[in-house]
Image 1 (cartoon, rainbow, N blue to C red):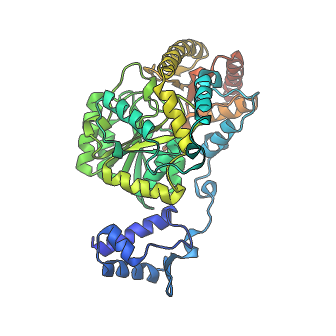
Image 2 (tube, rainbow, N blue to C red):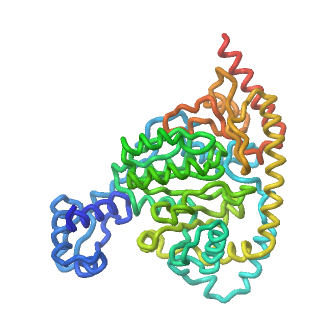
Image 3 (cartoon, one colour):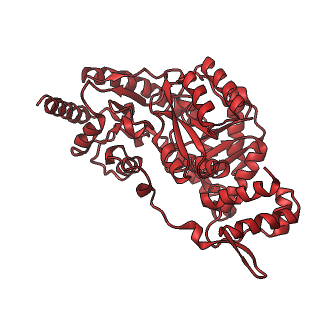
Length: 465
């Protein structure tokens, strides 16, 4: 690929992803040439090709601008394959997020309010209220608060991953971290590999970027490694997105043997891996990771604090090789004019640095272990079979009795104000119709099992009519 072709592809990708919006001015020829380390004539040729294709237009004396026709509004729901509401990721998310207090949510993906460290957050807010005015009113740095990045750096080092501070950036949330990575590395038509099943919002985000989604079957020790190697060779995906530890939705963790073969296959096929490590703090002992032996050469580590500290005080992070972080920082400036709120990041840093965080995690881990034991026993009595017993966390991936479809079950339970997470909302291949994902921390109310068992009896009776 020539330098001119590389520049035109880069701008096409930014226009398609929305990083360059309709009517937005492109960098001047001299500025873009300096930024990309090419000659001005190369930039001129690239701009002229894009203008000839109708993607950008020239304004005499004012530079080049993205054509308004390139950013037509589109509906993600309309562009996606039509799915029953109960397994449409957007519908499932809306139901859980907008549910009233009367609604029970054993299918949601977060801890109950009274499990979270609200008092530590209140204390941190009181301290911040006495801070300098700059913290309350100014923009933050482009990489995010240094105190929080240093905490992450120390945490990574304890795990065996030594990362320079400049290779860690903070984002507005974990979801925004993934969106930035996709905007930076993908263009429409690329193939992205995900686990089957996988966290359903991975799929919704990838829809936005107009890529092809391929799935690899997930096993109790990670992806089916033979299928993984085969799909890499056949599809040549650009990215693979996964949870190595306490996988969502199954709760499984990667084995060292699978991790080694995955990294070897990724290197052979030039695959970039995005490792979402959001559940790391719920593991009693750390399982295998991909970023640690890779050293952030082709693995990007990301995560957030929404599961362990607060889903209201949102902040995510990315750790990656230096040139990628530089590009991601620039992209975040373009999309958000800087990093996340300094008030948010300083609050999280103060809570994490205090002794209360470790005590909070110890308490939550014990409560989750007890809740998991009780949930396994209760679900088993109801006729559901856990796919495996996770080493920690709050998810249980359970198989329903033969003949009962999880989508129909979720529909029936929703009528009784119980929100379930049916298997096919997580499955790219739609092959998990007999599974449900349960959150063990939301199974203490006996009404959940009353509604669930009644709905199962009704569906079973209907199947025998």
